[in-house]
Image (cartoon, rainbow, N blue to C red; front, side):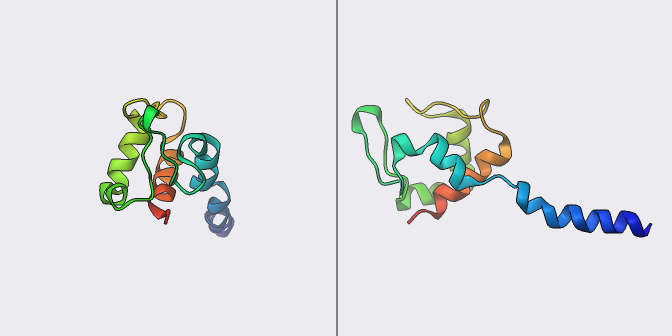
Length: 97
């Protein structure tokens, strides 16, 4: 019993080390079109700013849906990223100022 409690504590403490990093995923997959701070605009491709009140009003559900399913010329990342990576990236996008 004591060993399983110790293992559970160690696993719980190590979990953040393996959590998805929204900033890293954004930098790897999104930065080319949306820029480092989400302010890049490419009208010809339909790329809009991400650091706006309109995007923030979409909330985690709206941003997650767009990242998962894509929108207009933006590709869907649902088959390319895990749900955890998409959620972390959506949270990162919503944290942009």
